[in-house]
Amino acid sequence: MESLFAPPPKPVSPGLYIVATPIGNLRDITLRALDILRAADVVLAEDTRVAGKLMAAYDLKKKLLRYDDHAGDKILPEILDRLAQGQVVAQISDAGTPLINDPGFRLVSEAQKAGAAVHPIPGASAVLAALCLSGLPTDRFLFAGFLPNKSAARKTFLGEFVTQSATLVMFETGPRLHDSLMDMAEVLGDRDACICRELTKLYETAHRGRLSDLISDPALAEPKGEIVIVIAPPVAAAPSTDNLEEALKLALEQYAPADAARQLSQMFGLPRKMIYQKALEMQGKARG
Image (tube, rainbow, N blue to C red; front, side, top):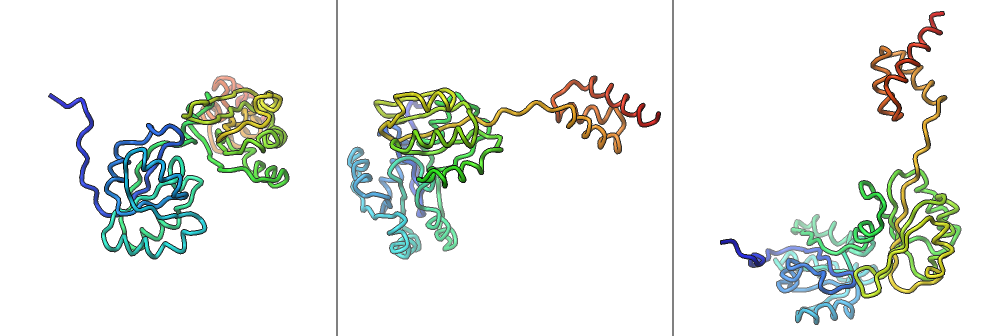
């Protein structure tokens, strides 16, 4: 009979482990993450005080080293030396998956160059949690990180995503949320969006609506807590007859009317029979 419980942990081999931690609810840590942290010779953390609370919650007594944008370069040689000695090094962030809008890219790159094994230990992610909660398309998305602080820089930043046919995911702070929503509506247009706050925590909330509605929502004037903004992709414009005629003219230079109609039907989302009839008409006019 198969066990109803999780299989026993396997021995942890030497290397660098990128360990995802909870984004709010401490019970969202994985069993595998706990196995790695128990086996670690040293744990790298953005903020050792935040990491200490997580470690204490699971009775883990490990050496903690600060690893962030400021201290990273200073302790990198020590980390690489530990990996060369065959130690287990775990990197965690304050919340969620390390490297995602957090320090660690250079560490992973240098560890791989040195020949050390690198293992991702997946788990909680505010980006994925917000996508699941938003009710917006999830088949294609783009994570853009934190928005710039100033309006002018923010508008320039948002302008890069105007034509992206993907759901956008961004981080923002409560005090800047209202101004950022104003800039989003101006640059991206009045799209559907969802504002997720305090994900997995006691006061988790999700406000859905058009950007114009969210701008005027008093609950979003200056909310507290961690905020993730999810914005729907742009609505595709209906194909125009002019575009179709131009595309059909070019297609008929290489294909028979039936083949041209089949290809353009998929491209424009229009009935093949209608395009085929138009192709015949255009050929008749050309001959006449």
